[in-house]
Length: 207
Image (cartoon, rainbow, N blue to C red):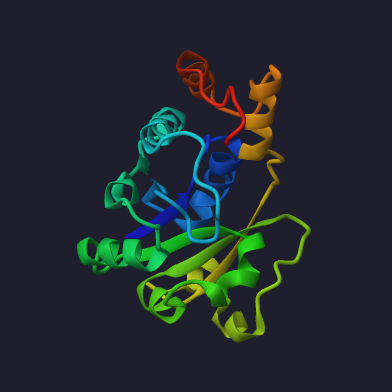
């Protein structure tokens, strides 16, 4: 069994979080994909604008049409800085024989050496790197030997480059638009847009 895992702040959850994963899931042969909202990410100094409850709810709304996509509150319940190695260790306990693929964007590749217990992460899972068509994903020399094709990866230890179409949207831009009274209709699922409006999220700049 192959499982994809995507962590992030999801503040809010938008098309850029979902569409690239939908584009590559068949090639990666994922039976399930878990989206895991972070309590707080280690490489971000600022806290999320919306609460963990709201970020979890928006991710559920955006993915509920897909039976193979799931949203987990593991890191939110932990209530501490969200380290990938800890989440993967927990997943490996319940999916001992599965292929676990931690999904990242190609902009995260340069920082791999700074991840907590990176060697342990490779003992637990693979990295699947979402990279835009026509652009070369630059893998640090230290990890280049780990790069393999999707159908050659084992249960852990590899880096797979998964090419997909760019979705030019960011959570920062969405929050800016909301504060300015501009439409976000093309950037998020309609149910997420209604949720944001109903709960009056992102109306004020983060203090």
